[in-house]
Amino acid sequence: MPTRQLLTVLCAAALGVACGSTDPLDPAADTGVPADSGLLADAGVEEDSGVGADSGVDADSGAGVDSGVDTDSGVGADSGVGEDAAVEVDSGLPRPDAGALAPLPATSPTTQGRFTTSDTCAVCHSNHPNATAMRDSQARPIAPYDLWASSMMANAARDPFFRAVLSAEMSDTPVAHDALEDKCLTCHAPMAHVGAEDGSVHFSLTDLYTGTALGHLGLDGVSCAACHQISSTGLGTEDSFSGHFVVNATRTIYGPHSNLFSTPMVMRSGYTPQPAAHMTESAICATCHTLYTHAVDENGQEQGEDLPEQTPYLEWRNSAFNTEGGGQGQTCQDCHMPVVDQDGVAVSTRIARAPNGADFNPIGPRAPYGRHLMVGGNTLVPAILRDNAADLSPTASPAAFDATIAGARAQLEQHTAQVNLQPGAVVGGMREVAVQVVNLTGHKLPTGYPSRRVWLQAVARDAAGQVVFASGTWDVRGRILDAAGAPLPSEAAGGPVVPHADRVAGATQPAIWQSVMAESNGSITFTLLRGGHYVKDNRLLPQGWRADHADAAATAAVGVTGDANFAPGQDQVTLVLPTTATQLEVQLLYQVISPRWVAELATHNTPEVDAFLRYWAAADVRPVVLAAAQATLP
Image (cartoon, rainbow, N blue to C red; front, side, top):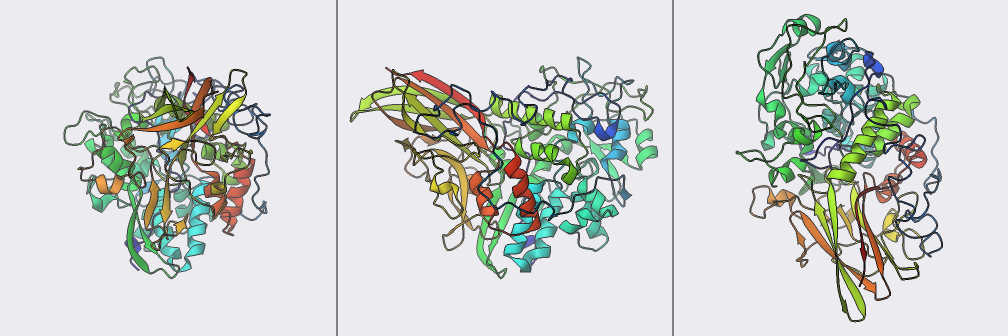
């Protein structure tokens, strides 16, 4: 089967957050040491600002003490809305052998062919205490290398969830083993993949452990020399999607600036900088963040169905945020690489410093200057990378990961969604309350890889403070619970799927916004190679989405037929409460990896899966609260 016709698995894309938001992440540490000069807690991000000292989540950033169901309410002691419980290690999943997978090596400085590891760039594009370059209006350090190093882009190949899913896919369809590696590593280890193609060799997942030149290029993830060498060829067209970016053959580095002082870069790195408008356009992101997969059976035979596995670019293009064709919206870069500082002030600064730490006098301040924050909807994997550095060997420091986690959490909590309550009338002896959920992002909510979900937690109390209604409550492992405090059957591998909800009358049918795949025969699947279509995709559409748009078929909702309250940019859910309810609180919750997805992954027996399960079992996996609202009921 042609490689191009097989599945690409992009497991941990750094999207799924608001376009059009102000940036939440504070800048890099001013250490002058590229290897660990990432994002320091004292650079505007306090140690407890959304990232707890020992859990990765601040004690009040998830479910508050008074935000839901008490431990004696019959909804379970670990309902996720009572006192914050300690994170349990027991996940109910098989306990893997901790030594089953060798540690990844640290990235070593490497140059081969068209590519070089990021440390080459860090010599001039990291902060130094003696340089004024790469600082915002308050002199806070914002060097590209320092901000990037703790991002999911930098750690795309080290991401243990990605490697676990890829290994599971290959174990399910051995005949597609090499083709899967080729496609997945195209975007997770682009320099190694393209470099391997240049040498007519196959780059594999195991090559990340070898310490070879290609291995080190692969471990550098989506690095400087990868993105900044992508040419404008085919951008925004189908030919460029699913990792079909084109890297120039001339060692040209593209950027948004003109009037370049190129001699230092040419002499130091061998790259020649060149102005290029496409570096600030969403279409360059689309090369990896628009992905179609092709359903095959266990023998690798195509089933005749193509699945839009992730389409944040197409969702953005069919939204009010679109800037293509003269639109006045916002690009991917506007949100994920903002050109304003954390106070909303436009950044104008020198874009590089001298290797000795001094400023380059011939270089004056430049604008626009995109801060390479690249925070998205992922707070979990950066914490796993931070907490398992002995195995995963990331370049960034723990403080840098803390700041990235805090930035992603702030993005999610402040700029992603809104919840509004409208208490209604008593109908049939029950009080109805309309809950409006608004998507503030420039794509679906959630977007990206289908492990992500958003759901509504609603808790109502009577005049005495007793819980009289609860739906969407959760335990310390992030599993949604029934009225007795047990995980719903839909949380277990092989369980049912909770359908789209327009009305919620109890705990067994909560409102969950997610995408669920099915095989060509209609069977639910969590294996991308088997996914032929969606049986459910009620993820919140972006504002401005149109059914007559060219990208409508690829981005349309599935399973919402008959729900007139589901509309572009929002959904409205009716809660059916007893008339004794006098107080109502709702929270919109988000997970980057649902427990159901982990349970399905755990049915595979590979070293990469075992390693991820061990990391996940020890991690704080409580959901992030995107938005909340309260109401006193008449």
